[in-house]
Length: 243
Image 1: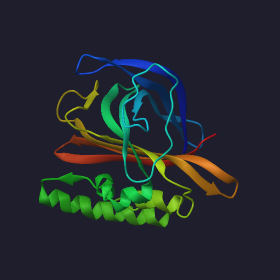
Image 2 (image 1 turned 90 degrees about the vertical axis):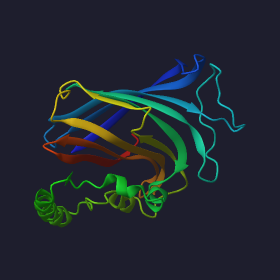
Image 3 (image 1 turned 60 degrees about the vertical axis):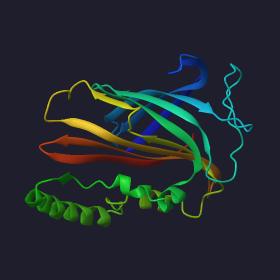
C-alpha cells in the first residue's frame, strides 16, 4: 500500500471557546490518500487541525501573529492544545480534542499506551470469545510469517522501524475519545453498529537514515466498531517520510 498525507497551512484561525472569549489558533488542513500497489484508492480522509502552542513563557499566545513552534524543551511537558476534525467520504466523521506534548514512540511504549492498540476483537460470550481467540492466533502466525507486527501490541513494530535512528525528541499529538470529543457516522446511526473509543497518536521528528537526516511522521490510531455484540478494533499505523 502507498499512503500520502498532504498538509496545507491555513494561517491563524479564530476560535470562540466555552468561555465565550475569542482565541487564535494555528490552522492546518490535511488530506490522507491510501492506494493499493495497482493505484486503486481504498481510503480517503479530509480534515483540519487547530493547534494552540504554549510559548516558552508558559502562556497561550492569543495574538494574530505568525504561527510558530517554540524549541522542544527537555522533559515530558504539556506544550499545547489541539482540535482535530476529520471526515471520510462514506459519511464517517469525528471531532476530538487533544494535547501537544514532547515524546517519542519509544517513550510512549515505556509509558504503557501500547495496550490501547490491541486489535483482538472482544465479546461477552465466552464460547464465541474462545473461537475468536483461536482464529486470531492463527492469523497472527500468518502475519508474523510475513514480517508484520504483533497484533496485540503493534507499537512495538513502529518502534523497530526506527530503532537507533532517533536524533532527539518528537512533537507528540495525543488524542483520546472522552467527554469533550464527538464521533458520528452518517451511515451507521442505527443498531447494531456503534463506533467509539478513539485513540490516536502522532509523532513528528527527525531520524537518521542512509540518506542522512530525514523527518518522519509516525502514527497509530484505533477505533472500536461494535456489531453483533462484538467489539472489532480498527487499528491503523504507519511511518511516513516528509517529501
